[in-house]
Length: 309
Image (cartoon, rainbow, N blue to C red; front, side, top):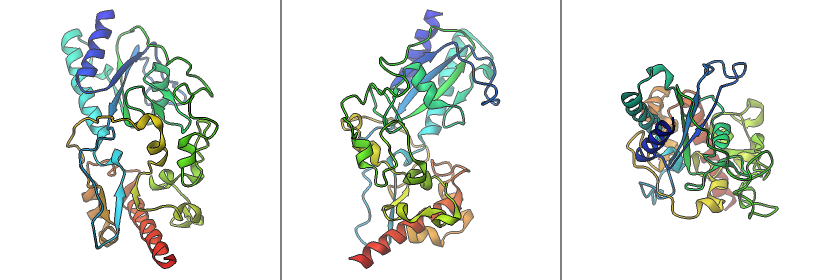
């Protein structure tokens, strides 16, 4: 099985994944994840970098409109790109070693515990802002995993990784940069996020009507800024994301860096669905209502700034 593992990990690296690890044996907890429980022998875990060397120099319009920003991780559909590359790897492995197609199940942006799988396999380690950091790409990557029909030698976690231990954050001090940079104090610095204060949590469609503007509390709206989708404050501050990290090239789900918030509010639900179809913002759990709500938050923030100025 050594040659099998070498082949599949090499295939992953050749496909553009920046890190490839194997976790074995691996079985999903059937009580928590019944849709994935199937007695898999091993699982391949990979990191596909989107990096900080963005494929498009996205600057806001010089005048006119109300530009609302789309975070770099959502300007292309890296999840779809990762799945496409995983499918190619599965085809190569089946051609060489055989195996039923159903044995190669791809998990990417799924309901499976992908971050925990990544940490257990040594793909990366949990950081103090709750994200996974890899040695090669910081936290600027998406996780893609694939079940395998054979038992392979497992890769160990990164040295020092474990509960309440953040081996790649040891030099960040008592108040890590990610926590200091969070505009709402949602990053607690202990590996947990206070979702009730997290801008990204609300930008992803969460919230309750009693909180204010369509479910976003006033304290969060006050620092919303120009974000149409995605808050990257904690990632931008992370020392592991400061060095140049090259992302993969893809044309999947291309979006501009900014979209006019006022124009979005003029569009119907069907128009918004059509605009974001196939993109990282076209997922069913986001939807026109949430995108429109985010645009309203941008407009409110800009209005408050104008009036206070």
